[in-house]
Length: 460
Image 1: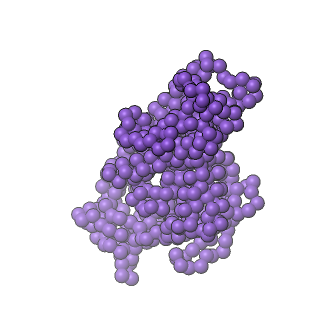
Image 2: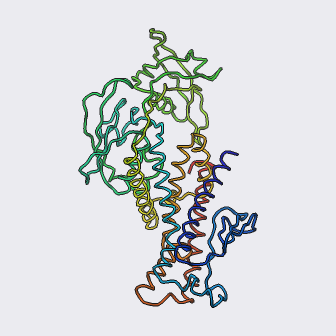
Image 3: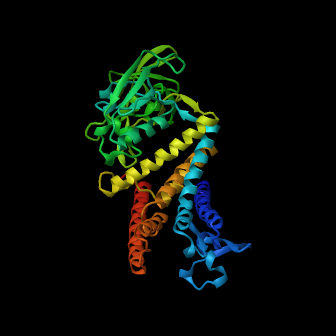
């Protein structure tokens, strides 16, 4: 909990600081007087005046603001009217407003580049046996297949696939665009063995409903995870596996007469073994120290994330193959630019689909989910945490560019109206639009918080 709280506060504090600093630097560049730079809202906990600006840290850390000299908020000395925000040309006002979201997007590029340069250990895209009667199986994928490259149907070039994380990202991007993809795959006998003959397969991702494009997409396509050998890694003393005679290091060859290709298939066979909610005996053929034996286990039903499933109380699966994903100076930076752009476009696309009902509103996340992922990524290491910061920074930048009156994008919408008509939005309409924007933001925040609590308290 301490790690989660600290990681969350650092995440929000850093991203808000960069966002508001973008506004601040743009205002200074345009010779607008900045009265206060606040990190947070509410009661002031710390303050310091430097030059003509008061820098403060406030009690509520979920946001911040830059207060500028403005005749709409009070009387301005005639000698300083030229430095008031409202007196500046339209292009300068638009630049100052847009600088906050742009600072978040620029930060994301820098963070993604740091991750690319530092390198990160990722799970290799070496697949376990896909789930029966799934899209992956129908496409021709099988246990021990390694995905080498992917291409969308409307593209000419193949994109190398270096990790399961990259594979999921490419699938998600294609599914949101309703694009089928081709895969170059090759079967591998072992982690170190050379690839077998390459095959080209097609996944019809255009048939996946937009409402199903989320973090569970790979599972819905039939992917059960990376390949790992069907070994017994650990046992719970006194559990069904221990009582049935399984021992650490045993390799499972068959379960109920079905050949076992990998640990994922073995786990799935155990989960599917119950009949009408009652656990059935499992006949296992195993290899131990070069000798083949047969054992019978009696699973027990246990609650797993809200579902009663058969369990044998054993850790199953050998080590998963890993690969270090690292890029050089130029490639790492260009990939960071591409990733920031792609995540921005994907975020807008998903928001649009949610707005018209094509995508599920369950994709909205709030502070609880952000805190959870901040803590998890921080525990994995600084590189993973930096990658998480980049993702949230993109989301914050994109969110603030939405044309909602209470956001930066709403102010840019006003300026667009002013540039077209030659006159600003009337005070009466500004008040109406502000009220509508607040209502929409409260609705979005409520939905995001509801989704957070639903994920936290149980399956949806």
